[in-house]
Structure formats: structure tokens, C-alpha cells
Length: 127
Image: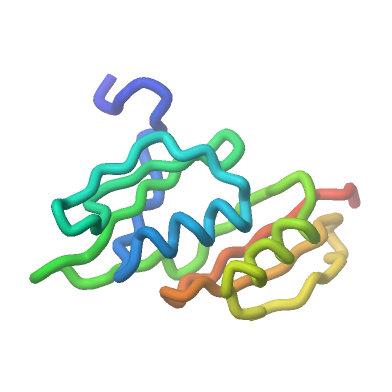
């Protein structure tokens, strides 16, 4: 095994300008469980890990030569897309795509976080 226990081989790892704000957005939108947070002396976050349902997301704060590299788009299935979407908007996300009942059985929405990443969220309701 090459990865730590309870870690997938390929977790998303956006590098953002303000990791504390990103962690607050993820908590408001998805009710994440924070696994760890490592900070510098100035309080900025060097590395954090959160669990969304059965998935792990790593967050890092860009510094010096490292450029921000947010995830362009991430899809997350949630138990209640309406509540998660409302939480994301309350946390400052922009509405990129409204709540929509899709013909393939998902109810979806697309909030865009302050870093510019699009979070497709959905609840499968059956086809």
C-alpha cells in the first residue's frame, strides 16, 4: 500500500489563495468532517484534509512560487442537494447552475466557490 490508511489513491488537492475560507465553504456546503489541518506560524494553512461522505479532499494554500490550481470542476453526490446548495450560497458561493431536475434522475446544482472552482452537487432520485 502506497497511500495512508483511509485515503484513496487519487484525492483532489486544490491549491487555493485562502484555505481557511475554502474549508469554511466546504463545511457550510457539505458538512465536512475535518481530518487534519497543518498551519504555518502566521496561521495560513499548509495542508488540510476533509471527508465528504466517503471521499477525501486535500486543501493547500499557495505560497511563493506555487500558483493556485483549484479544481476546475468536482462532482459530489449528497443526501440533500437543495440544503447543500443553500449552504454553499450562504457561504458566499456564486450560483453557476440553478437547481435542476435532470432527465437521468439526478437533481443537480452548480455553486462556484470564491476561488473559481465549480462544484457540481447532486442527489440521485431515480430515473
